[in-house]
Image 1 (cartoon, one colour):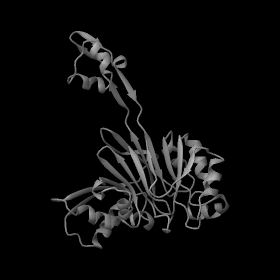
Image 2 (cartoon, one colour):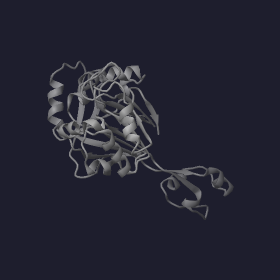
Image 3 (cartoon, helix red, strand yellow):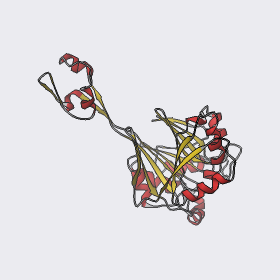
Image 4 (cartoon, helix red, strand yellow):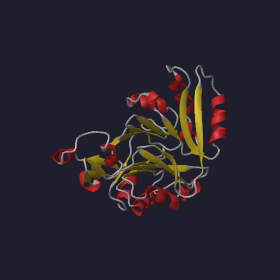
Length: 300
């Protein structure tokens, strides 16, 4: 599992930074979080096939988070046989906005866009597969906005060397051990705790845009990596409150309260040519902090 940050600028792209977008690669799936202007070009530069996008998660419908959506959806349909199916998850109002969006352009091939509107109360599970679950929570922004958490399920691995010494051969009976159940093999009980080990699943959280709120802390609780907006330095705290964004210290405080392992800041105002001051302010509160750059790759 790895993610690639496709854009790190707030509102307006700069020469060095595109607007919001992040691609999470997990096994055979490609999860796209936000789709700002020129996201598909950023995917190209990062060496990611646009056909690799299997699900799209929009935090909100401000242009810098969805302006690249129509072009990406058109490209995804190219070269496909039959209808192309894409799931899009977004805050309340997403179905109507997506319907309008699809009317502004002509599609040569069929696209079925399955829109899932979300407006969770607290932290809610909004998607579950056999390998992972996605949780969402409302954020405190100037328009309906949500944050997302990707939570990988724990994996139980069978200790085959031990089982072979016990005379247990490979076969369908091992699936029960992987599911956390003890088995009886040729009259002998095989205890699941002795015969398996548990690999803890990873948790990745993506939050932008928001002002301070308890839901951000709850969603990010115990995350391995929290990607969080830090639009302003501490000197612009009044602007942060006015426009419902975070300063560097606010973001670092959320990381401390949520007990995350690593914080990666993003969504920087175009006024900042350098993020050194933002990083210094954040690390004074939460030392394990980094500032994102376009095309940064992080493995979990």
